[in-house]
Image (cartoon, rainbow, N blue to C red):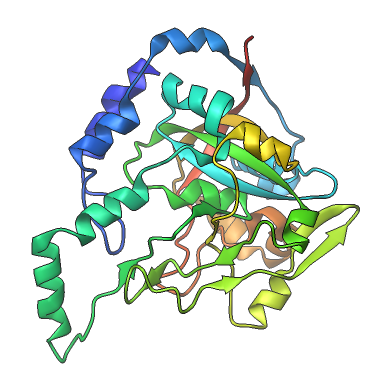
Length: 315
């Protein structure tokens, strides 16, 4: 990935474009993210993956078949969740594959904390809070755990910052045995993306409602919506941080390298947005694709996969 690191380095020096933390990445975090070891390339195998074609308008938008295909890669007796690892250097891919899996850091929360501990930021925030026209300034949440997602699309879109129009991410599929959730050895916590204080846990909610369909477990979105939660972001503090320890609990993982591209609004995407029946029939992977009405919630998808490769060990 050496040809991408130069592009990534330039992207990381630009403002992120986030709603409340529109700031560049700190230099020391850039060095952590982009550290490379080309000798590790030979320990990684990339195998092209294709998924079944979709019907109608869905088949005419490049990458929706990959999105749907990944969403459907479930494992019996498990709840499958997703996490995207950005800036996939060979070193970071090696760490994903051989050591930490889903727990490889993206350093986004560290970037946010750098800003929120900045003296100038703190002073400006206090000034705003004293202004009766504003009272406070919303902040992006920093969770005490590992961010995870129910939908491939949410995992893919969440780190849209610092991307070029054509880029790469690693998508990790995490298969968690339902018994771990049932016995609460692993807990999933729904959290708001934006809050008045970045460390406010008042609106966090433990997800306890699941249902099984053909031995595949899913989160009960209806039960959450009845409580006023349209699930996008969640986290866990209970999963191990090494693959070997996760496997002891029965947690398995699959790894894919995605080439991604920036979506342009055109007649096809507009046609899809207008087609209620197609969206409803395919909500299993398209829910939230066009964002929502909450300025602090989902924004519409900006990227789609153009190529998918499975990542495996070369031992």
